[in-house]
Image (cartoon, rainbow, N blue to C red; front, side, top):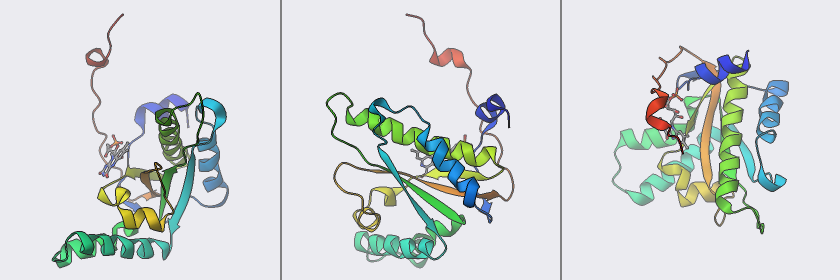
Length: 184
Ligand SMILES: Cc1cc2nc3c(=O)[nH]c(=O)nc-3n(C[C@H](O)[C@H](O)[C@H](O)COP(=O)(O)O)c2cc1C
């Protein structure tokens, strides 16, 4: 796929089915992530693949979190929490892994980790797959962080839902650039 075509036409795809990237295709996602701009080459990210029954196991963690926040949650909310990660055949948790560095502040490392998530999504699209980057309240939840081994100032920057688009979503319109650009 032409690079500009990808940049200008990428969309997020919420409706996903199998197959998800695997083997060489999945490795390509990691390699795309490793290629993003990275001040100090700190590689301030790590990835956790949530697939197969891992999706329902993490869903149970969300359910526990929900019930702790709201013991009276209704069945619909409980069902949603338990099956959250089953909306795609694979979910890639993109987690920052910030390092101490005299010249590279935390915010720069978070940007790099975010770029890695985007690069992975783009690499998926370029190979005929689709995905959507989601966070939601569980991305900051204590139980979910614990389950994924997230500590200190590190963050779950997103859950990248990956698979094959069932039906392409309409393209969200983008604004005219003039509203975002000024001259100095
Ligand atoms: C950090 C981050 C978190 C996001 N979290 C969510 C989310 O929890 N739920 C959601 O529907 N979209 C979320 N989005 C937005 C979608 O990924 C997507 O960009 C949006 O639906 C617009 O669609 P498009 O990418 O096709 O233009 C998030 C995006 C980013 C960058």
